[in-house]
Length: 536
Image (cartoon, rainbow, N blue to C red; front, side, top):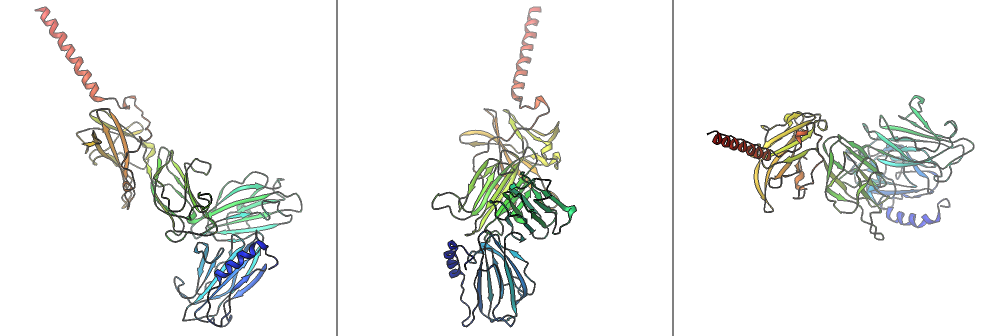
């Protein structure tokens, strides 16, 4: 073990004590593998492995390297969910299920796997019945390159952040689940900058070195964010014989760890929820709605790693929410453990959720619901409501899809808005007493239903006629859960005003106009009477 730094000896000892699982008496298997290249197999390979056996191998290479694992033979008892005989592979120690890369059985070879750090564990289990020839696997230490199958991960040039070596060539093939795409983001980049012919990073949209699908980058500017068109992306790093640099660092995310939501409502969960989320991931979920919308999110469940006992902060696994589309946007909060945040509302039409997990202690994760808050302006007088919704914010809707109280009170088209003008004795309005104050209340419905899928959002509109003050707050719109079960009883502050195309649509008090008209008419009649008396 001379090639392993001394500071890892204790760690290896502890991990090995945890990893040694009781095997069947008389069967020797498992161990710590620390050479740069090696192999291991199931007990009695190529003969039949014994029943009721468990073995664990801990592969540890020098820090800064990764482990590449390849199966040369694989034949275990088959079960749909691999409950009988199986091989489990962990990105780190096997005692933490958050490190699980995969569970395999049958005769289909597991894919070639590369760890995201310098430790990889393999667990073999057989039950009391049906044995087979087992498996034979080889491993090697990778300084750079490999096949990456995780939900997310980090790629760096050799020796990063120190200068990369000369005459290096590395290839990383990132593979996601079928029908998924891969997003690659560079966070640091410094390389020789002569026309990208000497030192460079090349990104291929696919698994092969096809020049027509390649983009080369060099110099000191981060390459643009890249999203693959398929479930595979190839990254190549190459340096020549002189003039190096610090190199690069990039994050990739795939599948359920990188999603963009554009529907007016939805649900977001951590990977594998409600089972343990993976360790060592960085996941991004972007919510992007039409201009004018705001986004309200509700935390239905959250169980992450506990706070640091030293700093009392969320230094380990945590979920952050940003008021915008990037981590440069204002952060609305960061949470961990079982601290359930209150409902949050964005200031605009974009919101970003980021989950970061470290190398151990996974948990259940989180579940979040969100709903787009329709932009509208609600005003009132002593006798009526006036509601404006910008038509460009809901282009998929007809005017009949926005109504007050019932479909018999639909909106009308007024310039660039859908407009509802309703007296207090129509459209389902009713007087109520709230906090010893008389108010008029009704429900505004915005119907986003499509085909057989019903999706009707409800907003309570309220007016205090004495003060001519109107407010609106969302009631529901997330099926099967009604979001009002998560809301406070207090009303939201007024939503952003809709742009009005008519100056007369600014909430003029109709009752005041009537009162003034009556006064003028009375004055005219009085004047006529006086004139009549004079003439007589």
